[in-house]
Amino acid sequence: MTDHSIPGGLRPVLFISERDAIVCPQCGGYATHLNVVEVSNEVSSARVVASGEDDRSRINISIGPGGGGRRHTVRLVIDCEEQWCRTIIDLRQHKGDTEWHRTDLKVENDEDFGR
Ligand SMILES: [Zn+2]
Image 1 (spheres, helix red, strand yellow):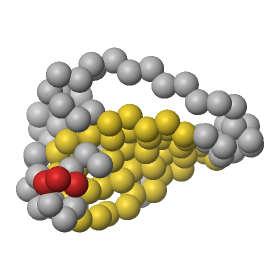
Image 2: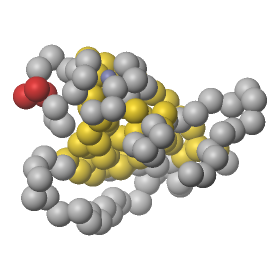
Image 3: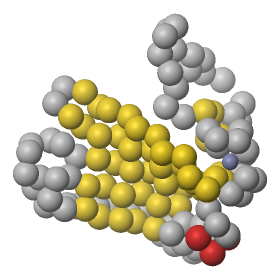
């Protein structure tokens, strides 16, 4: 297994199990689902929802030109069955940096999963 450790003082974006699976950053649960991916820039966005077992695995997304150059965001919505967690990870291009922001939420019930 590859050593993905990082130098001191830096924080991980995601937590990865010994099986290389994403672990819920809120409760440590293993039953996580990457159900929604959103791509946006300052003027447009596209949302992709994987809602069933038979959905295609390849999805191409094209959004219009942004108003401010490369200021685009990729949002990952990860739901966790174990404690009804929803974790939103935003990766935003801003000038020469890729900024990271995490929002922790709770899902009310299983009907809200992936929405
Ligand atoms: Zn969780």
